[in-house]
Length: 248
Image (cartoon, rainbow, N blue to C red; front, side):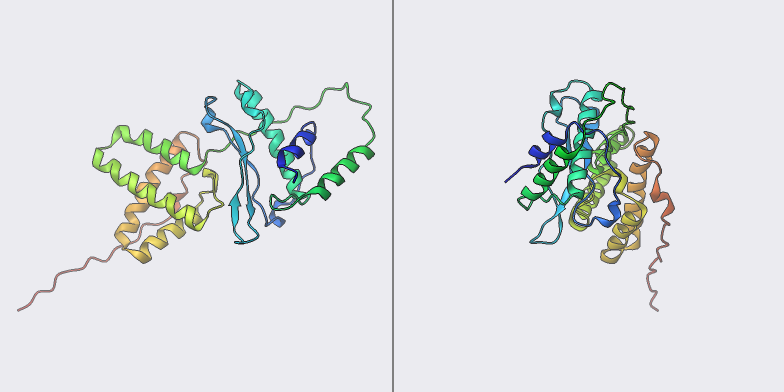
């Protein structure tokens, strides 16, 4: 069976591709780049999810490294991964599936290449693509936020943050397994999480979870990791105090 690396090797020289309407593609998530927050000591890769034909759920596939990590500068490494990401997206839109043989797709790609006339403008410089900064995963982002926050809080408060972040990460993995990037943590998703807490516990616990998450999200906003602290838009619920009855 042909692997994804066979296709990437053949398509590596293609720098441009047609735009696709991803809203119509339900079998896979848009490929993204993991850049380890800029740490060149760690492995960078392209990742994506594809719908498992047995479970019917989106499942994370094997990350694509290829030879990207042999490059020693952020610019070079990112440039290679951008090419991989674009090529992978192109293949997915052509019908590539990690659960199929894909021989027909490879054959069609080879046929199209053989029919494409050579360009007469190969010596002309190509327009440099504007590369978008890779997005942190939500787990990396929250870990970063807590690390910044812990310098200004007591140990007991830190444990409270750790527990609530742990609960939130677990909830996201169980209910939204295809969510990876911090940019995918939006108001709607957090509102659902808080509603789940409210149903299982109390308004007070829900409000405390909201406050801790908002505090971490504000750190991320202050460090230009997220565009806005969306939790500020979620209202605090008024908890009705339970008074003790007086018996006479």
